[in-house]
Length: 143
Image (cartoon, rainbow, N blue to C red; front, top):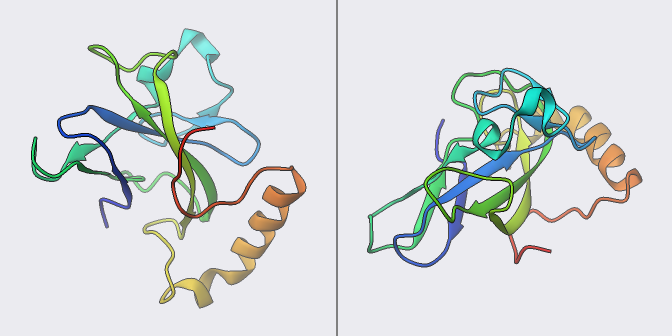
């Protein structure tokens, strides 16, 4: 599956997404591992997932793949969408919105796949709410 991440913004913007673990660790771009932000002098460019406008300069609707390499396990993952200001993602780029991805290890969990993954989701959601994080399945304005 692809294009699980989506966000609407101004035409011809350059957006990217960053995926997190519930403990705040961040996934590398390929999703192969997660770490504390900045480990090994890495920055936003090492964590960014490219988002593309569906009809360049005309739609304002951007999509990106959550995990094309099948590296991220079943779970619940916070995702932040950023507006890229310069030539490459940098730590000072402005966040536009946040949301939660419900992931079955290969695709977004939806009403059709929920039954097969309900125990993992319930466990992860309990951990998320216990940590004091806001649970919001719809991307909204950055906080």
